[in-house]
Image (cartoon, rainbow, N blue to C red; front, side):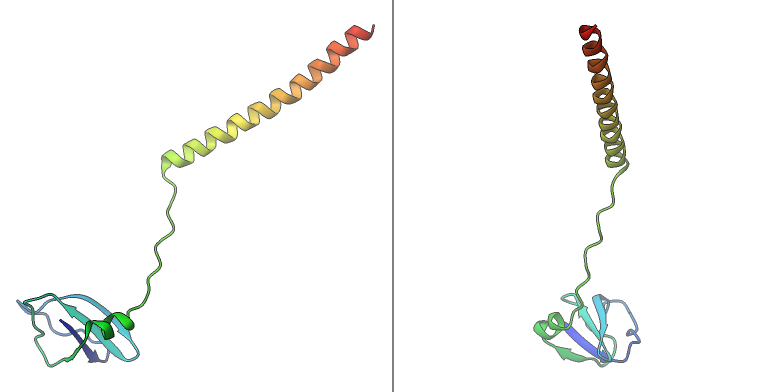
Length: 103
């Protein structure tokens, strides 16, 4: 059951008349009541299509990295640093060994 009310003041909630969803658009408060609930005051009844057509799109929040993700990233960065240092050490060692062979 879908309704709209001019203005942005929500209707009074009484037993058996609670709405499950609402939003404000273009000067109207749009409300969705679950089956069996009826508004406690005069509201203009609308179709589900009208309710859905004006409904704002709320973007999904960006996923936040977990502590496990952060630890995994730090581990990978440390491994990369170790491999870079090892590569540099291998190059120095190769030059030393080649220098010893030339003597």
